[in-house]
Image 1: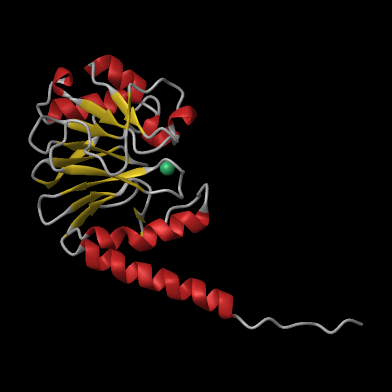
Image 2 (image 1 turned 90 degrees about the horizontal axis):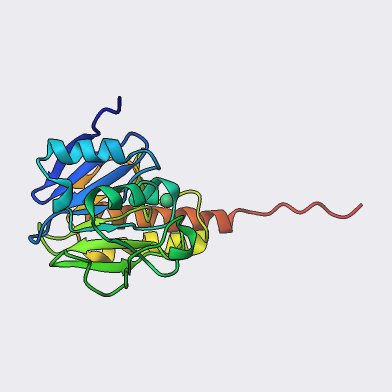
Length: 222
Ligand SMILES: [Zn+2]
């Protein structure tokens, strides 16, 4: 028997579906619920249980947004498409790496599917086609996917397809001017998320500078 995942209302319209290792989200920005990420393959029963707990009929789900091609974000997407009838949206750069055919593209700079007020933004590094979502309500809400984690504090993701790009993406998240941020891994930040992201971006930058500045002791050739 699969127990339903633990659900938590982060802000009105946004629910976290805690699958243990990873989070999925249910976002309704005014036009019906959209599932953002889907856990591992096999997590579909827990997610459907969470929908039931939130009194959302599977057929009410308007779209499935897969933020990137990892198995813990894309895993249950095909089973949930089957259960809900909702189309799956993936960025074209990550689409070749998911084990199913996506129904539609996610285009950075454009509107998110069935989500008024929500913008899709490119967040490369963890994967080249990763996207994050920014919702223009509640003073700015960021669905950060794996562009940042918040397990034992804010940090860039690990592992990464391109660590330099991931660090650059992490360092820019605070510019999205958000008060709320949620992550694939770890707890939501409600209130002051942009400030926390800016502080951590600065700390990461200083840490990488001091790594570069470490004295190199050379041994004279013998
Ligand atoms: Zn990932």
